[in-house]
Amino acid sequence: MKKLIVANWKMHPDSAAEAVLLARQTEKGILKSKSDIVIAPPFPFLAFVKKVVKRAKLGAQDDFWESKGAMLKNSGVKYVIIGHSECRMLGETEEMINKKIKAALKAGLKPILCVGEHLETRKKGLAAAKNYVQKQLESDLREIVFNKKSLRKFALVIAYEPIWAISTNKDARPDKPEDAFEMIKFIKSLLAAKPYTLYPKVLYGGSITSQNAKSFLQYKEIDGALVGGASLKAEELKKIIAIANNASKAQSRI
Ligand code: PGA
Image: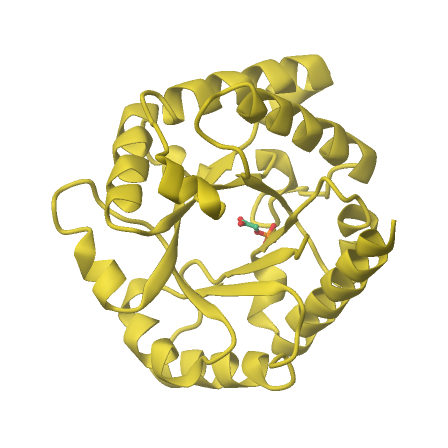
């Protein structure tokens, strides 16, 4: 299966001109890439970035649950990041996340739902982290039913991002690839047990760089990466995309 690489620009860069330049540089040389690629710029730059991307799909940093969801869709956005830990930390609740996912699906957008545990939880062990993530998923996806049409293509992306591994955190360090693999396998088993998501893609995020991408993407079960800091350097992101291309090629031979 193709890997999915999502460039999570968060609140960067500082100007539309820089955003256009970064998008152009990222696009250069990825036209024939075998991976799915998403660039998620900040809202003010969506329209500018839209004009220069051909290969990458456009992602939004967030959405809202009132009936204006079509605004993003009509602006060429295909994916929307929801429930990022940096928003949860500012007071976004699971109820709000649930409404945002429902609104995104209704508007024909693919939600990229971010889940992941705090360091205090992880210190208690992987089982405690799994428990935490399971509870998040149950609340975030409450009452969400996918119809047959949406099942034909994957309609949901989950990004497992242990909070302590995200580069903006003090002392951040990437998770051990084998632990990320274990957690992602667990997330997939939870979703497979539900009637609604036959083909969720589950990504890993948290300090992914070209140095460590292979150690995560080598696992068939890890469907791609949500890349923050490293996606702000076009050459770095392109190296990660090349690693994803090679990983899915190798996995399709197995
Ligand atoms: P990072 O960010 O790659 O800089 O750790 C990932 C994210 O927050 O989505």
